[in-house]
Length: 288
Image 1 (cartoon, rainbow, N blue to C red):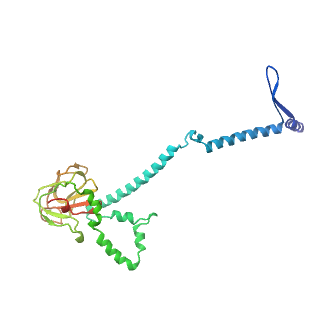
Image 2: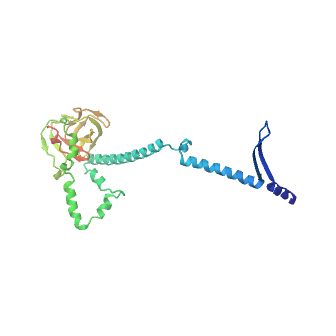
Image 3: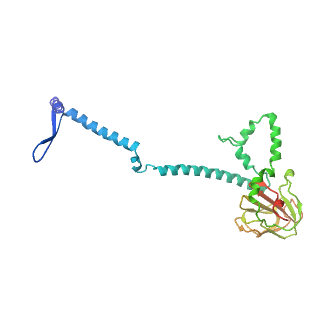
């Protein structure tokens, strides 16, 4: 064993020569002399230099784009754009959820949520309305409550939204006399129109029926979703002529007037018109 180790040490310390000769003239063109240890170190150094050079070229030049799976400039741009689109879609879905909740509240006769107020009452950290209300000073809470109650159905505050439907041609839902006028201050967000029993109730605009049902208080009622975030509701009908999902045009018969429901004892049409979750006066746009 000692003899073998001695031979290995002698090999590493021995001198070696690497030469290149001209095959024709046998002229010596290149000579490299070194012992075994230096040769091994030289080879390791060359390999390390090659590895470092390749890593530097890939890291600091455009060669890295040729690596399979590495994102290019266009793909990174698309990733950023898709992230922005996903964020926008999330906001849009949240808005539709609020509007769907408002539709359900409108149909059930409850007070809808104020979409603009919900958005404005959320800070960048996602603070909720309840946490903001808890921070109100006691001396200021009464005034805030009074202002919120007065502005809850302030139609003039939605002037910009109402201008979106100016000039639209509304079909009269039923011929008759308005017996109960629109009055937000009295929490009367509808109008009642006197009508003959079983007279035709027509859609005011084209749209899609999103609700058609019966309740003890409102009788047979039907609702239509129109463009420009408009919703029309027709209640106390004796019979419904359309179902959920039906697409209707302006003037299409959708129900027959009646007196169903506990809230009335005479034939009439309870009519509501909503825009972006806010009630608006149908008389301002429809001639009865």
